[in-house]
Amino acid sequence: MAHFNRLARLLGMLALALGATSLPAAAAPVSAARGAPDFTLPSLGGPNLRLQEQRGRVVLVNFWATWCGPCRVEMPHLNRLYDKYRDAGFVLLAVNIDEDPKTAANLAAKLGIRFPVLLDTDKKVSRLYDLNAMPSTLLIDRDGRVRYTHRGYRDGYEQTYEQQIRELLRE
Image (cartoon, one colour):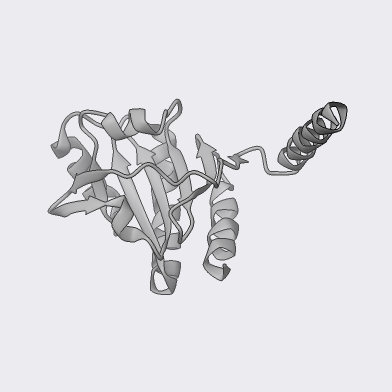
């Protein structure tokens, strides 16, 4: 029986590994069994926002910085996704990690960001999510579980984001 249990575990791990290789290189599933760590952050020109209060919606959390070139390139695409899906139960939160909120506010205005910009000046939330690339983007389902994680940005990632947003909105 012990050999059977070991074999079953090995086959399960193999199935997970094979399933993960079929995903786009930019996306990797995160354990859906664990909910996204909750946080509350101040927003630019508005109230504090708490992630847990977004339950029931599909949430894209995008960690970015003003010094990050790919972040700047990605923002117009995120604006388009936000405009297209916000009435369908989609929320987009841009978490800026700069130490000076004025720097973030200036660039957000220059880029015409239309979704909430949250300020993680002490980087507590960034550490909570163990970020190692800018930008980093998470897609969270209606139940508050991280379903997709994207590290960095390259042209075309927004098509993957859109496909995943539509998938999560259909659930």
